[in-house]
Image (cartoon, rainbow, N blue to C red; front, top):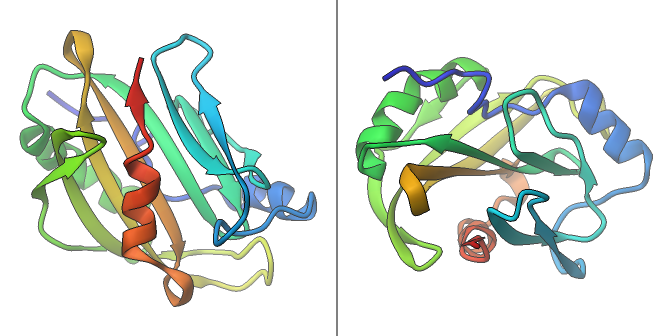
Length: 176
């Protein structure tokens, strides 16, 4: 089973993040939250209400703040989350310049037994400064109904990265 790097990309497109930043959107921090509900009714999760939609090809949704994002892709999956994550790893590495990944590990996320990998990478061009940004991210593999898996990715600049906050975002994800 091959995983397309386009459908599970870890890197935001600089042109799309520039659009979000130009509209005055900011990081998550203590920003008021809102709920995104998938139009097909498959899932929902919370995100900072100041973020904008910047979905890339192959993704179900991408929401972007200043140099940070949450991306969700729903994929068919007959495999356990760890096995799926192992197949997805090369695509994540290819899509994330300067990728350095930790070990993929079993992880309790969104109330279920999934998997997670923490990684660092280099955002090529900041929407705010126009310069490269050292970034950190977590990718969660959340099993769902009907042989589906949610690939939930959060990334932010390393200088403001909060692993517990990242888990908080992922744990708001619910299948419907």
